Length: 68
Image (cartoon, rainbow, N blue to C red):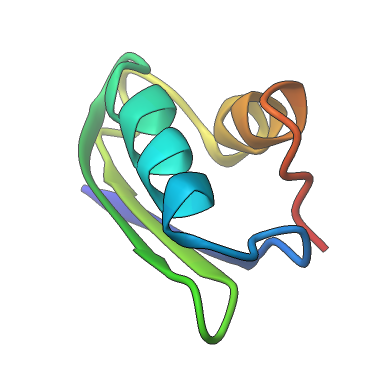
């Protein structure tokens, strides 16, 4: 199990949080997603045999929340 921890500056509300959690949770290998609106932090616990940091960063970018 690995963890990706990034900041996504475009997170501004609870809708953003729900959108990110929903879309990342559907990605292969993702076990848990935590988003903190106040700090704009995204934490993803995932199985490194099924995905990687680059793929998860791409999901964030694709849904409009590119990581810094």
